[in-house]
Amino acid sequence: MRDAAGELGGYILVFYDITHKVKVDSHRSMLLKSLTEGIRSALASIRAAIETLTAFPAMDDAKRVQFYRVIGEEAAQLSGFIHQTASEFSEHFKSQWPLENIPGGELIGAIRKSAAEKLNLEVDWLPGAEELWVRAESYSLVQAYLYMMRQLQARLNVGHFRMQLAEDRLFNYLDLSWEGAPISLELLETWKRGALMEGEDGIALTLQELLDRHDAEIWSHNDSPSNTCALRLAMPRSVAPQLLQGKVVLEGERPEFYDFSLFHQPGQTPELDQRLLSNLTYSVFDTETTGLNPSEGDEIISIGAVRIVNGRLLRKEIFDQLINPRRTMSREAVEVHGIEPAMLRDQPAIETVLPGFRRFVEDTVLVAHNAAFDMRFLKMKEELTGIRFLNPVLDT
Image (cartoon, rainbow, N blue to C red; front, side):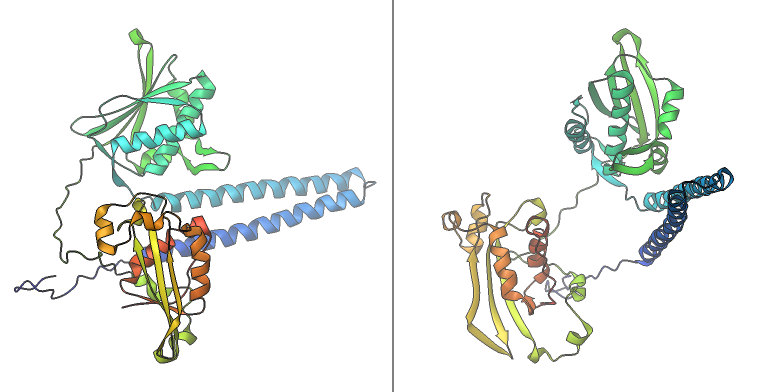
């Protein structure tokens, strides 16, 4: 925040109320605990009955029937227990869905991509969605359309679909159409009760639960002259969010990130918190990157670090490595850090460099200016490299 003289005079802190999240996490833990205990008890009874039947093949019929009854009752109880737990978890999951404003073109693009990859289905995109927005939870909505395509593929042998997004004053309409026979109201009602799952893929919710969460309705209609049928999903109309033009506060510098989770790194222990800062060993590091947005594809091109022990800089213990980002780099980025693309061409990739950097910083406190920025780039590479930096972090 700037004061009347135009100087930086303060900051805005944003706090999040995590009370609900704590309650949800606690409820989920209770569900998992009760599920584990319930399954273990039922399976133990079933196993004991089967072992007894196997050990005594000459058992008289009356006793054999009793053991069969035990197996049947325990199996039924187990099935009911799993169903009850799944229902409770469904409600928990449903309450966590964030509904967001999504560009219609992106939503249809995600549905088309998933249909091609998972169902080997071609889905055409009819014009009209580019300027429209929908308020939805994109992942679950994609799973719903995969579910409906899967049903139509199996029931009517449909191999080609078209999608179109339209709107009126009150609603957005997302149509899934095909050429051929329509589906009946009774069949659609049956589909609504089905879970949006295929093997281990999808989510453990029914189509009706998804509709309820989105305040949506779905129905079938057909155009007899063109032999075209469609499933139409109607949702409350959404509008494009207003974009606010931000004002640059400090030009020529990285954006400053304040990540308070850095105070809770897994490697930070109560014992470490009690030690004097002068008694700790530090690795002071910095990264250079192709840009400022790791989630949009920017990459690390350089990592440099030095060691500080007992308050003294060890000038011979350094880490300094250029990295091939395997992508282009803008002239604006080069002007900031001075690293030319030609300097990176024969350098190792990030998955080769990070193991050595982790060994260098092992058992030390990481220190950086605007550390959240650098740590974000490192975190984005966890899945690729399998390397996590759990060190305590100090941000200057």
